[in-house]
Image 1 (cartoon, rainbow over the protein chains, first blue to last red):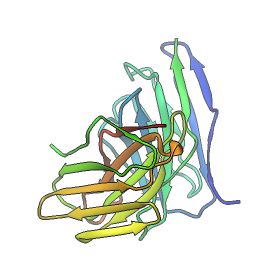
Image 2: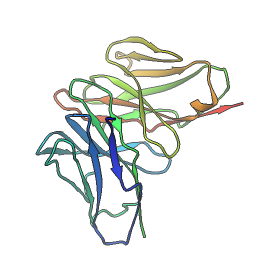
Image 3: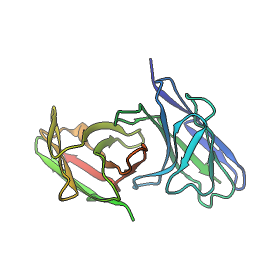
Length: 112
Length: 111
């Protein structure tokens, strides 16, 4: 079955530590996205990538980094520079020419 | 700045019809999408409008008026399982697949 996966589902880290969130898709989608969602809030774009080896900053990229070395994978690193990293992180993918984003199940990050 | 405005919460009873509005202010416009998200879950795609008018998909319909920078999602024959958050999203830039999401509307369906 094709889909988009994120791991882990829950993640706990100490303040000051970098952490990497995984996102993998086997839908052969071209574009991939990372969104942050805070309680009761909408989705805010962190980074997106339209093709391999290229990515663009979204509205809240500070304190985050990404890579797109393979079409299937778009990992997100939350660095210690991110002042308030506790949130629900959603990864999504989209086939070029379409308008439907497919979302992964999300990773809930808690920084202690 | 670019923004999409939605009501924060809407309440309706089972079997009723409810409309969730979305007004947008963006530098460009290449389509309005709607997503549903249940608590703790991932958003799922509901509909997309690129041109003015009404698009119907079962109990859900979506409307767009580009001249008014406005759209809405219409949910008919409400069911308890429709209780969720609903987000509108705009693709605002030609040549990229960057989307801007609205603030979301929490729909509560009462028995």
